[in-house]
Each structure stands twice: as structure tokens, then as C-alpha cells.
Amino acid sequence: MSSLQWVLIAIVCGAVEIFTSGFWFLWLAIAALLIAAAAGLGLINNIPAQLLVFSVITLVLIIFTRPLLMKTFKTTDKVSNVKALIGQPGMSLTPVSPLHYGQVKVNGEIWTAVSKEYIEENIRVIVTGVDGVKLVVDKAFINLS
Image (cartoon, rainbow, N blue to C red; front, top):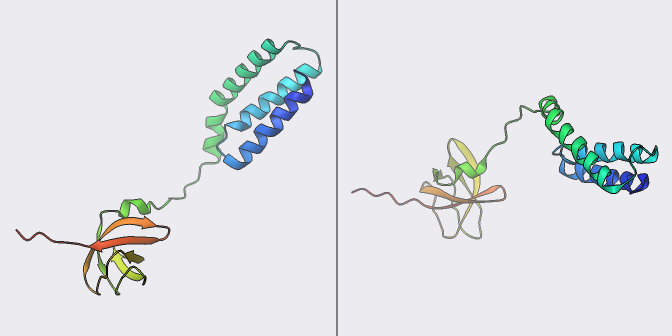
């Protein structure tokens, strides 16, 4: 392949990296640029050799440099896992119905909620799902036996 084709591969890999930001395609783009330079200088002319060197460079970059880059860009932000609220009990603070959003208190936090049935104020509820930023709740039935 010509050096121009390797440059195009590097551009495509770079564009994919911009949209995925996982630091996987970055190494493919760098390796493609190195192969483009080698092909342009006439160091590697046949396609099998180019592909072999491309693969080796990519693997070396991923194995030895990606962990260092990931440590550098590691964030300490904690992502809240709203899915962990499914199955949690709560209390309705306002009436909740299918056509009227209400508020419920779950784990000490107040959430907007929706339900398939009408739920009065001060009724125990259980979270059955998440719809965007709203909790889907049902009446909680307590077994007294």
C-alpha cells in the first residue's frame, strides 16, 4: 500500500478515537502514520511486511503506553448508579399516577416518579425501574405473616 493510503487509515482511526475516546484507535492511528513514513521512505514496500510491522507497532503501543496514558487521564469522578435504586423501598411524598408525575423519597433522596397506577401520598412504594431521570414505582405490599 502507498503511504497516502496509510495516512488515510490514520485519519479514519483518529476520527474514530475522537468519537469513542477509549484510547484504542489512537494507537492504530500512530502505527499507521509510522508505516506511512516507512512506506514513503521506501523502507517497507510489500503489503504483508507493512501489515506485520503495523500489527507489531500497534501491540507494543497498546501494551506499554496505553496503561500509562490511562493513569494520566484517570478521573476521580464518581458516577451515580441510579440502576442500584431498583428494588429499593421508598415513600410517596405527593400523589403519583400515570399522567401525573409525583415525588418519592428513596434512600433519603427525593426523586420525581411515575407509576402505572394511582398512588396516594404517604404510601410505601418500591422502585421497579428508571425512565430517564424519573423513577418508576409501584405500591409496596408488606407481608405481615
